[in-house]
Structures are given as structure tokens and as C-alpha cells.
Image (cartoon, rainbow, N blue to C red; front, side, top):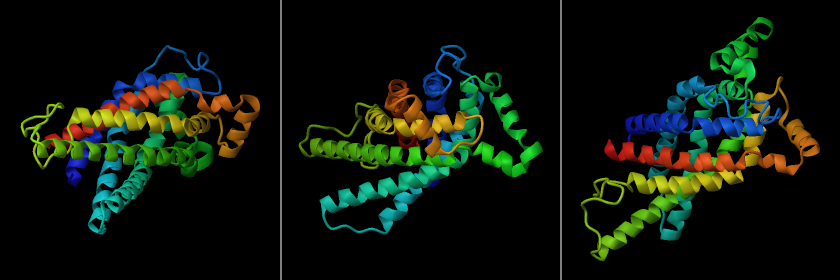
Length: 295
């Protein structure tokens, strides 16, 4: 899709998924908190921190998709392949690289809003996004602007370490499932069992359109669930780093969890995370596909 389409579709998709699934994200954060689920708020105030999510969702997702689609197009124009097998392998590598660069770009917006959001979700700073932000900005008094910057981007490294593996799994799988869907539709047309009117997703079908929104949502849900389960330990580490009272080394966090809580703690919140991202993948990539097709 063109840059403007990716920008608008990504922004809409990011806002839609973050607001609709915010309660599940809150529960997951509290399960992963070192303080424990109920001391962090339990089932109460599940919309704490929603303000930061509203601010960061659209630009973060827009950054991702603009970078992702732009990188894919650039790589495709510069690559020629001779066989279907080579083309499939090359496409998967392109999708991995494009998704990785997209996540790095998105983290420029996502990490500060995630820090503020998770501190509010865990009940810190009276459970308010504004108070959490004020607490971070207060570092300027003794640490200067650099201290504020470091606090806002605390967990940058572990967030990138989580997001890049996640997208390397999710997006190539999503793209491959979409390619399979297009191939299946082409075979049906060749056999004369499919018309060009409408598909099951309710989108007008012609040669210029990708798969429909509902089909893309189904593929997004499946690929997101797989990626979420595999990368849960990285998500636990990210949450612990962001919620720590002071800056802490990732290696120290790993050793502390292993020594004090055991290996099971690395999969804390795996059920709500897989549930949240499975549903979120459907909403995120389904709404993105719907907007792209509509535009």
C-alpha cells in the first residue's frame, strides 16, 4: 500500500486494538509484576494508564506499518528470483527484516508510553498516567534532561529484544497465510468455483485486492498466538525492568527471577498474553487490512 494508506490504516488499527483490549493488558501486567497480582491492583481499576495508551497507540502503529510496507517494497524492487521455492524463502526474509525495522521505529514512541502505562497499571503513582509521567519528569531536578530521557526509555533494549523476535515470527507467518489464501482463491477461480463478486469477508473482490478483512483477521490471530507464547519470557523481563524502582540490569533480573521464583515465573501471564494478542492480532491486522482494502 502507498505511504498515506499505511499511515492511516496503521494508526487506526493501533488505536482500535489497544483500547479494545486494554483490560487484558492490565491483568497481564499485574500478573507479571514482582509485587504480585492483588498488591498491584487485582481486578480493580483495569483502565488505569489508558491515557498513555491513547496518546501512543496511533503514532506507534503508524510508524511500524510505514516502515514495514516501505521496506518490503524497497526490497521487492531490488530482488529477482528464479523459482517459486526461492521466491517464498526470499519473501520470508524480506518480511522478517521489514518487521524488525518497523518495530525499532515503533519503539521510539511505544517505549515511553509503555513505561508510563505499566506504572499506572501496576498501581504506582496513584494509578494515574499523568502522575506517572510527572514522577518521571521530576528526575530533571537531580538528573537533568538526560536522566528524564533514560527514565522514559527504560527498558528500551529488552522491549526491542521482545518485539523483534515476536514480529519475526508473527509477520512472516501472517504474510505466508495470506499468500496461501490468495493461492487458494486463484485455484478456485481457475476451476470456476469462485466468482469475482464478493468473498466471505464482505470485501469486493478483484485482482487488485489482497485477502479480505475477516480472512486477514483469522491469520493475524493465529500468527499472533504463536508468537505471543514463544516470546512470553521476554515480555516478563520487559515488565520487571519497567516496573523496577530504579534502573536494573536485565541479567540481574533474570538471575533474581530464577533464584527466587523459579522458571515458571518466566511464563507468568502467558494465558492472558496469548489470549490478548490472539484477539488483538485479529483486530489489529483485520482492521488494518479492512482500511487498506477500503482505501
